[in-house]
Image (cartoon, rainbow, N blue to C red):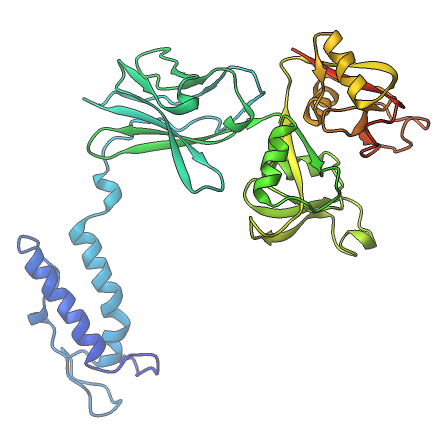
Length: 393
């Protein structure tokens, strides 16, 4: 039964001639291939009306419906399925794509070959979040390896066996968190596997003594580093929100976005809406000003409290006498998170703020129902009302 014309079919000769040209090009490009149809075997005649046409002729609508998919099928069969021509997959897919670690640990990023190519190199790199670039870490040919940059000086090949191309990172740092790529270069078809190194840690909001919304992106980044941290990523902020972080001030994240986590909706904090991570979207990194969300991880040393009624300068002296320094904000949060530090006394910190960590909430110790690090803000440095928290390695 003939197929009637449709309004969606392009006019002849544009579509028909275009696909006849494709067939002609295929015949010229692949003279040794036997194509199932050629331009000479197709005869097209425009029907005078919509009545059925003679047997052996194709009408225009029929050609429109069947020629285009046939053309691509022919091209696919002629050129072959790309997957059928792939060489062997030398790199085995990782069992775990996310590797968990802590600051200061030695961690291994697994990369294993299923078989050895005749000759090859393995290239390890780190994808820098928010900077759209990769940082080279190490290159090896299986016998010798060469490290590059600051991370390369702490990295080595594990070499557990002849197929092992795993990367070992010693003394993991906060900036080591992120996405890594193990790339096999063998001169024919390069392969790669991706892994994510995720540090266990804690996110804390931070603002300076002069008040909220004082940082542009670069100042926020520096402020976190000054407090023994780094700008948190969105994934880290989300994890902190699932663990109870509820904060009404917006802060910079490492990717350059500005967000804040809300568990309990309230009028001064975005009004009604579902709990979640509220977003201001991308902002001008130099002009716009907000707070910062910082991230820190486990400590190499420990934090301890020195009681007394001290000024800020006396707090520094008290820590020096104990061969320590006044703790930073990140030190206190890490001690609370990883060491369970619980102290119901406000103490000076290095930035001039006064805070105290609570693991077990109680009525006469901050009054809030959840664990956390409480803040008295930034008192006058001459006030002699507080002890101090010291940090010693």
